[in-house]
Length: 276
Image (tube, rainbow, N blue to C red; front, side):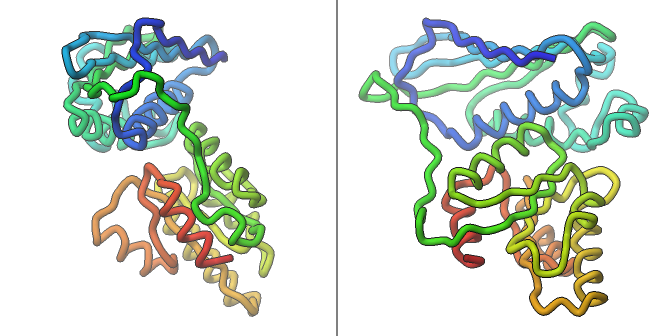
């Protein structure tokens, strides 16, 4: 399977927008395509849709050669926890929450999201969003930096995350800060990797196959008690849900806090500083 990204030359360089929201939408759509495409190609295409006097509307299209979606199911796939076929959840995992989150984020960017698909031949997810022009046309590449870089000791961090694109993002954020990362794809693997006193921090996605993040956190806390571990490893949830009841549920499962996706550098640095 190959991943291709194409941006038309006519897309303006100097645009202002919410990089965090845009990044999370693309992570969700590309990750969704990777999940349902066993072979072939995934392509991200960025094109200008309308060039106004003070803003531009840009279209993003993510195409895959995966299993496709029945046409009569396309209208409801952007609802929370909706999938075209229950058997998809059993085979590929996930609940469809990523598409619902993407739809909400697109609407916050004055845009629209929709899908085209043919069963057995793949899907294309489109969304467009509006971006004001920057005063300076030459845009500088976004840099991921740690605001407190150098102030935190090198940490051994266990990251449990099943989304392949999220895996790469969180690993990059931690590696450029000098930390050692052990990456696992589900809660059961996180419990297996945990060892008394070895990890300085655990970052745990909540929506995972086999064991979800809450179940895995409870299992680690139980193992700490059984092993009479001298130290208690901090466990922070990674979740797109930011409601107070979600944070309370994480605390009741033995977690120490809650990082909301898309993760910002400042929020991550505060957690790392509290541990280091």
